[in-house]
Image 1 (cartoon, protein in one colour):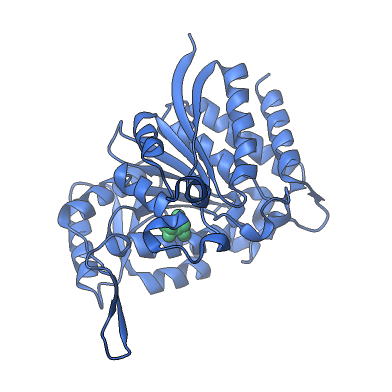
Image 2: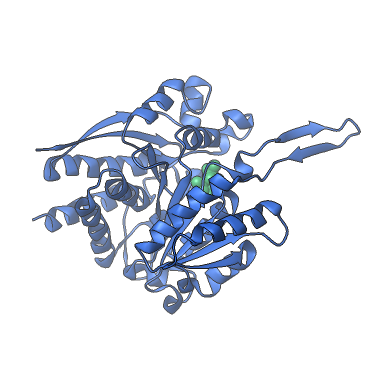
Length: 365
Ligand code: IPM
Ligand code: MG
């Protein structure tokens, strides 16, 4: 019997629609070839939604996002909306989804594909075989803390305020995700904060240490976030799971992503409580500079769909098929512009999509 799933597709802005078109073809392929019956809903988010509704996420789209099994999102933002107020900017649509769906755990794997070791800006031996999982807290910290805002001090001066804030329970739940993840991997967690200057960082360190008592088989160490950034480019393979707050996680995951050759390769999952909502999206942004040219890399979005299959739909076999297909296409020498290397064949977004579908066909025989 076919398995039934519901998926909300939100392509967003910039290259979002182009890369999502390729992921959508993979969804269709799964329907036809693997008996997975996806009901696909479509919606607008970010600037695309702002242009139509005057806000970056409509009430209807948010309600739909709450109802479906998973959301697959492209990317949001672009210079077109630079002048828009903060609460209506494209990025706010993403933040509302994260907050309202209570997606507190952001999993950002940084895996270096064998075929791409030479595309990294680091030496091949430093990144070959790299497999890091960044567990970023996603609904707290300075992104959401109050008070916030810009106030006029009336003397020609203004004051901008954001608040970094974490509670025990917020730290505990993300720490549990990290330790559970490490238990299925290499059994090591690095927790990263700035306990040397921030009370919220000290609390983070103390509470993660308390949670670690429940996981005697996991090795925990603590690393200041600046040092962690440095170690990520010095000796990245020392890490297994990195657990960190919303802001440091944003930065450290971009650093980790670049180790793998390109931001265009990396998927992510935003998860809440087990059985709750889930959202999957590429780590990269909307890349307005190349939008509409048909040259963007669709792999991160397609791998995000694979993550959805693994973490939400419990279809590990199909997730693996997609990952193997991507691996195969890269090994065959095809490259989008962002991962282009000498001697390889440069292909467009849609040709990369075609090739992944062909690889899926032959793996599925
Ligand atoms: C990310 C992005 C977002 C963030 C932006 C688009 C709001 O950089 O998902 O890493 O800062 O979380
Ligand atoms: Mg980011």
